[in-house]
Image (cartoon, rainbow, N blue to C red; front, side):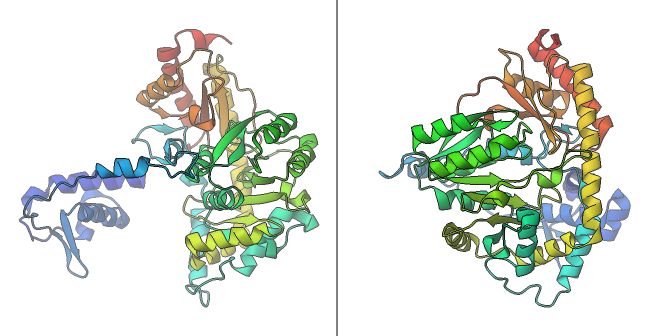
Length: 487
């Protein structure tokens, strides 16, 4: 049983048993609850904390947990209707509404109900996360002298050097002085967009693209403009036309294992994209989120765009989060020239710095022998899961062809039959016990067709993938009729 579900189950059982105790009466000890319900001490602690947050339990260090006294009186119901007007009025300078739609992001962050197979996950399954290595790294980091002291605002020098080597490759085009340590990739994207484009400005994006980036852009008052792509990445001729038509000065792309398509920017397009951006006097934000999610037996990876960019066109974003744990929120921004100081200033104003213990733990992790072993394990397991999902789709859903099989990342991008109701398929699938990511949030404008993104990273293994596709088949039969049968 997942920890989150066992915590909820225990909280329900304790809540139902409260009538046995008078207000102020002591509850059974944690040890007694562990033995009675056969759960871990951590589960007991979290369940009691949840009940304490509801005002049902009072915990006293050294004494135990007690049933809380009933609350007296009825609290006044507030009137927040004034906020509707305050939040909807835009200033004269605002050209874009600042309403934030986080639905596309929440779809990959929200935990589905117990028993639902997660084909919508945005991270690795717990079995693929290096929990022991992370725990050991955190323990070693905590023993370092000054581990809880204030770090340099740019990041620890050793960690900046490590990121510089990772980004710049053997040529050493990127130095430690070009790197800022950030609180994960999403934070880095936010900083980069705010630094490079003023509110109301257009920003060019791949179509389709990562919903979290679209949400960040819109929350910053920017106007995402889609640029079509194919299996070889963004099309340079359309990118050039978009720059001319909009006057944009920023293009955001994921050249490696793009989310959601899995495309890799073709070798002949890499230089073309940089040339187009340079001719427009524009920056390219390179979101290199999936470099450490390469599959076993994949072809050698191309270097980062930043490694081939001496002129400062590229602002590079990367992170350790995707290949480790959702909670290891450590990433990097890399840039050349005056823009680096602006990036630094915005990051300092927003968050001061990344917590030093987290940076120290990241250093310990990537410097340990376990790091290489973990990357090799992830490569093998992601390839196995990818092959299992492709095989199951071809067997059970031949009417939903897989147009591109990526050699990195952990998702597949499927186009539904013409006329399909994307939302109906997603809802039917959830009723059948499998959570999917709808395609609509991945488009900055009207989508050309209905799509689904299926993740194989947040599943336990091939058997669960096969069961998930079987459930998806039932949902398609319910919502698409016979259309999905056509190969």
